[in-house]
Image 1: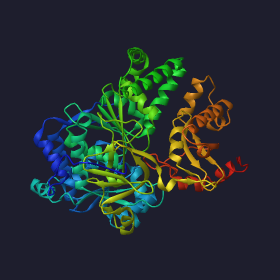
Image 2 (image 1 turned 45 degrees about the horizontal axis):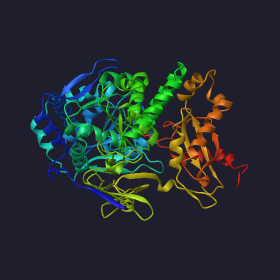
Image 3 (image 1 turned 90 degrees about the vertical axis):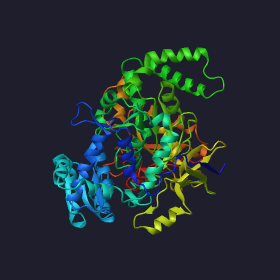
Image 4 (image 1 turned 120 degrees about the horizontal axis):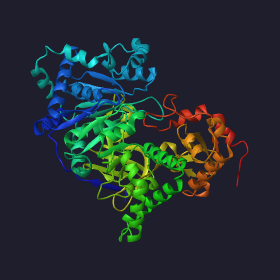
Length: 603
């Protein structure tokens, strides 16, 4: 099948905007909790009803008016994921302005580019550290009139400044935008080149969220639905969920520090979780190593295998046998229930995106009671374009198109998307817009296939296809995703373009290595020492061998090299969503790539 369409479920008034979603929540359930937040780490969750949230949004919006923010102005937000981020987002929309997110990890050069390209007039940052980064480039961003710091009382200052602004002015401004108007400009983190400003409209968010609620009500909607955001709100996926929770009637929580994530999950108790595959991999690897270090590694392995086999059996006509059901109950008592408890005890659903999760982990989590619905989307599609449904899940695929969405496969295998979530263009970049959009179809740059039931499967990135010296086309993602699942491995970059065979650059995981060493009865050692340890190398050799079973001999990893450092966001080798910036890695580690081919293993 080359094309599949899911019909629209809910139509939205073209004259409305995102403010109407919040107004409807306030009108429908004014005294039900909409947000829970903490004022300090380790403190209690403080609930806010829809009416209370709206009052805080209006108070901050008045402050923005008093500070000179006009309809259509760009207001930058640079912060970790926290309640104030969401409050500012809705306040900026309430005054008819356009929020522009900046990653809190952004470099001075990136900040300069976004501030100038988007013509940001007012910038709100989280900390003095962020303010210092901005100050480095302030002279290059003449449109920025003022920088406010959340940790220095920015919210209170805005509320105080707006005390004299009339409620009627906010009400007037809330009604100015229509669905076709720009709601936000999100700069793609990008694995290559300078970030492009993706213009997403009120319609992109409003139409997509209400239709997603209609299509995934069992997961995201209802009085008991709760989710905890820990992904960056500067990323479109988290931003989509921030908006989605309003029409869904769900409760939204925020945690800015992943170091307290387990504690926060336990106290917040979400019913659905949003994350990228790397987090699910780390949860699994951490649990495995913890069990091994306490002498229960074999028990964990048996329980994990049972969970996977049980999940696979759910997809068969006869389902799990009575014996398998009994084995699964034992595995649950010994191991699986502890992982559910670590996630808060209420989480039944997880939505994973950003990279392939892999069938093994998908079945493992479903077997323990957490149904991971893998999806697919990009900044240009307001996050999700496809997702697996609770009643229609095919593990290993990224699901069916969301309501109001069409997906097709071009002649060269590229995935193209058309629908309510597709952006209107790149900010001030008509050339890039023309290259990406044609007749409403967005060229994703990803490769994939659609099965007979309409499920999409991702096979790689069009620009990342490696062509070996022998002319073999190799999609690196297949190898990288499998090998990166090993607890010792942090990142993998497959290489081999115009080379005689496929190789790989590997980094060791600073968090995973200590646990693995302890679990295998080995003394503590540095990452440099671990990279030369025979047992570590033997384990990675086995992982490479297992990874190679997924591909042909010509596509397999023949040699690998362990780099002397991990790849991080701070070093510029990873995007904020943890995708590898391949061009930067290949440039800076060119000597390591060449070292793989010093002695060619030609067949």
